Each structure stands twice: as C-alpha cells, then as structure tokens.
Length: 146
Image 1 (cartoon, rainbow, N blue to C red):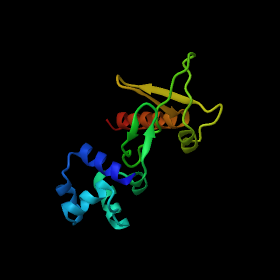
Image 2: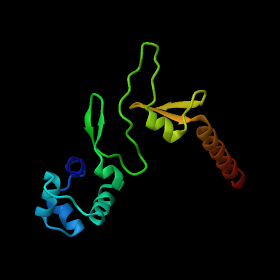
Image 3: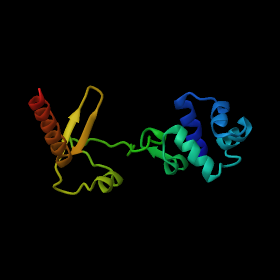
Image 4: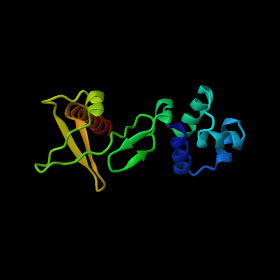
C-alpha cells in the first residue's frame, strides 16, 4: 500500500519526514498521516512524491511482494522488479509472465545471457546484436576520423 511504500522509499533515500514535507509544501504532521495510513495525498502530491522518489505514480501506490522476500520497494522509473524465481534441477528458470509480456518473450525467442560479479542479465538477442552493430560502427567512424 501507499503508506508502506512511503516509509520504504523515505528510508532508502535517507530523508526525514520533515524534509519530504518541506519538498512538497506540507506540514510534517500531514506527511506522517500518509505514512500511518490515516490520510492519503491527492494526485498532485502523489505526482510530487513520485518525482522526489524517482518512481512512477502507479508504482508508488501499489505494494509489490516477492516470494521469499516479502514487500519490496517500488522500482525506479524504467526499471522493474519481477520477483524471485527458482532454478530447477536442470538449471532452467521460468520468467515471470508480466516480464514475458513486457518484452514479448515467447517460445523460440533468443536471449543473450550477460553478467558481472553480482548477477545475470537476460537481453533479447536482437537488441544485443543491434547495440553491438552500433558500437562497431561508432568505433569504425572514430578510427576513420583519426
């Protein structure tokens, strides 16, 4: 719910209730009532809060839960938290339906697996290949201009 997200986001960003209240032009007490659920902000205040916290209004007012984790904070704009998955004995995973729908992942779709020391990323092969073509073209242009 909104009140839970407000508490989490404020804590993550390290703001006091007073600092947030000042940023949106209300009293600390009014903000405190939003965090307790006694009242809710109007849509304009929700827009201001979403902007301050770097999230969408939609993610600000919804509570997301992940298996084994519990309530999770709203993801930043343009980012998504799809929840947790379990790798089966054969090393296979099931990508959450919402993620499959968002990225048009259907049977036979090719993905590239990338990683760093902290995690793994799946990216559609066509997107990866197009980005690599652009990088190579830019490198070629730079070399030609030297």
